[in-house]
Structure formats: C-alpha cells, structure tokens
Length: 293
Length: 334
Image (cartoon, rainbow over all chains, first blue to last red; front, side):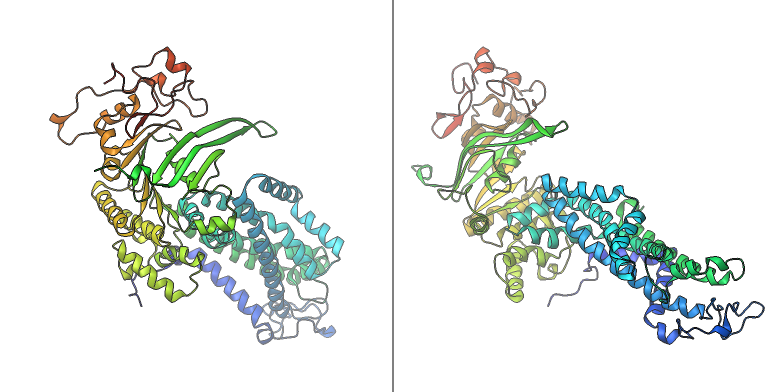
C-alpha cells in the first residue's frame, strides 16, 4: 500500500476547507442543518400533532404575549392547530419538495447540458433553442401551467419546479463542458480509446462540479420559495398538509387580528431560504478560483 | 553501410492529407472560408525511427499529428498504418488501433485530468482496454511509473502536486501504458525548462531503444529536433517544404525557408555564429488565404516570377533529400 502523503487529498477537499473560514457560510450551513434535523425528527420534536384540530384553542397568541401559554409556544391558528408543530412538519415538506425537484432538475439538466456541450453542432443548437423556449416563460407562470394541467398536488408541484429548473442546470453544465472539452486531457482520453460516455461522465463532469454545486445549493433556496409560492396559490400542498406557503395563504385574512399565524411560517421560509443562499454564496467563494484573492 | 531502411515498409504513411477547418458566418452559418491547416501532406514514418516535424506555430504541425491519430478527421487524403488505411475503420477497429498509437502533449498542466490521481490517469488506458482487475492495473501502473522515473508513493497524488517535468513523465507513462508502436510527441518538451527538457528527451530516447518505439517528434525547437531525429520534415503553411535525414538537412538545407530557420538557431559560442543570418520579410501569411504558387514566395529572397505562378512539387533533389522549391540544389543558391 502506498504511503499516505499529507497532501494526497482530492483537490476539491482543499477548496471546501476554505469554506470553514467563511463565517456567514457556516452560519447558513448551521441553519440548514437545524431545518434538516427538524424535518427528520419532526414526530419527536413537535409538541402536538400538526393536523389535530382543537376548536377550544383557536387563535391562541404565542407564549410570550398576553393570553399565551407554554402549551402552544408559537400560538395556534384559526382551527386551534399548534403553529410550532406545523412549522416543524412543514420543514419536512419543504425540504422534500426541494430535494426531489432540484434532484430531478440536476439529473436531467446535467445530462442534457453535458451532451449538448460535448457534441456541439446541430444537436447543441436544437437543445439550446428548446431551453431558450422554456426560459422565455416567466418560470412561476410555467410552473402554474404545468400544475394546472396535471392537477394541484404536491407531486405535481415538484414536477413543475423540476421542469422550470432544468434550463439553469443545463446551461451551466453546457458552459463548463464546452470549456473543459477543449483541454488536452479530453484529447488524451480520446487517444486511449475511451468511449464518449466515459469521457463525458468520468473525465469531464468531475471538473464541472464547482459551479454545479453552487447552483444546486442556490436552487434549493429558490425551490423552497417556489414550492411555498405554488402552495400559497393553492397549487401545491393541499390541506391539511402542514406547508409554510399554504399556511400563510390560509391566514391572510387574519393578518390584523392574529398576525402570528402568518408571521412564523413566513420566518421559517425566510430562514431556510437565507440558509441555503448563504451557504451557496460561501461555496461559490470557495470553489471558484477566480473570486479568490 | 548501405541504407536499407528506406526500402522497408513504413509504419505510418500519410497520403496527401488535407485538413481544412470551416469558418462559418451569416444567418444560416454557411461556410464562408476555411483555415487550411494542413494542405496536402504526404510522408512516411518508418518503424523504429524518429521523424522530426518542425515549423513555426500555426503551420499545421499539431493538426497533422492529430489527423494521423484520427483525433481529427481529415478533409481528404489517406492515412495508412502498417499498410492499411485507417480512415475507414469502424469505431470498434479504431478502438483496437488506439493501442498501437499514442500521443504526448505539450502542456503538462492541461493534459492531465486535475481531478484524478496518477494511478487513475496512468491506469485508465488499461481499464479502457479491458484490464478490469484493479490489482493487475495497479501493478502495471507501478511498473510504468518506475520506467519513467517516478516512485510508488506518487500513485495516490494528484497532478497539481507535481512539477512540470514530473507531470510530463506521467504523460509519458500514460502513453506507454498500452505498449504502442507509434507515439506522436506534440511539442512534448517545449513547455519545460532546458535542464528538464534534456531529462525528458533522454527518457524518450531510452524508451525508444528499450521498446522499439517510433516517434513523430513535433516541435518548433530546431536544436531539440536535431538532437532526437533520424529524419526531419520542415512544414510551412500546411505543406512540407523539405524532408531529409537529419544530418543532411542541418548541414545543407535546400529550401530557402529551412535555410532561414536554421540560420536563426542560436549557437552556444557566438564566435561560431554562422555568417549570413537570413531575416525573413514580413509575417506568416494567413492559412485562410495562402499565397498562390509557392506559399513561401512572398517572403523568399530568391523568388522569381515562376514562384508566384506554379507550385513547386516536393521532389528528391539529393538522395533521400526532398525539397519543394523550383531552384533547390541549383547553382546560384547557397
């Protein structure tokens, strides 16, 4: 077995260690981890059943205001459901939507972009014009069209978000692949007789991961936001599923009477989106050598 | 000693190879012009020899090297490897042929994948050609690294942890992995320091005698080419202008372009400087629209009316010494 050399690490690990020096990125990561833990351990963490209606406890204010009690720390909504529990379960829904939709967009976008960038020519022209067409729609409108066609449900919302996110991944991957495929190591891979698929996925793509990781992280933030927006419009999660956007929509009428019902899901969205954005920016600084001093 | 090697069947033969890169423009991306990178090159490389290919940057030597390996498809012409035309080869046949011919690149930084370990880079040709067992591959990689003067502990490292010379050795090890017959060295030492150049050149020479390799040694550095080559071809604007055994060409270049090139080679001792350094007029013309007749005529000291009208064929002026000049070897020319 070869001796372990202290610097024998994957080059990307060196770059990622830069991330630890970026405090805001670490803060973003901490926020994300908190949300992820909330999502995973929702049944254990939430004090109440999120869909349990308690008509005697309608619109209880948070514990620290007048009339509030420690039974419902963040208060209750108009059906007496515990808001903290709904937010904790809502993290599960939002993160799942983000994971599935960004995951789908990542896979399809990467495949489309890398093939388009590697083969260039007519295929590239056709694919990229298709991408342009998708991009020419305001994407929330496109998502609405997709959901309206397929019917409102959480699954269809995921699909709609995934479709609208494919172009950004495809473009980023295509640009990176175009740049990388000019390099001699690609020519060397051809010279040893490697097949195209091997060249694309084993040789080129690992060198495109930097921008792709950044894009993925930032897309998580916008997917959470878009999922909330679709649910707000009634096109995503259906009641009684605890979902931040849907909860905000339901409590619109109460904003003057019981502002907490709307505020806390809003803060949850803000926190999750901010967390992913901070991490994404930190990753960009760490992975993009051009931005480094 | 009679020169019998000239009669042996060449390992690789290029016949009138042409490579034009189209330039497209306008709304419908119609081809408006073409960069004539290689414009009718014929030459033969015999087994076991080193053929030097020299010329200014942009003259098409790199493109030619890639065309004979079929890394670029030629526009026309034919490439024969061991007497068989390889241009009609299917993907499958080509894959098998890749074992026989390899390439070493100029830039030791971009020619190695930065995300892969040395073990992966050198072992990949073996994996692609069916050595599935990891242990077998690693053993072979270790052998190859030792052949090129690297050590076992280098296997797990990444390209950025090496110096330029070491990286070039990794590239050499990769090229050797499939035990090829022909290696195209595309400016293989041009990016290295002079002392490292010597090391890598000596390595290449040692490998040649050990494994019976044939080299196409592409370079713009005339002194390096003189040192390594058995024969040398001089290329200008996509054409071969002179081809001869190394000693003959350096002693008595017949084409005015070769003469100018050789007169520009720096000599270690200034008192030995050859008299009459030839300074060429102007720049290399664009390969999009090369001059008529002899491509060198606008810059040539000896050009006459004929030169701009008729293109001189590459002809055998002395024994084994070919030049493409109307006046080569005639009186009046040095």
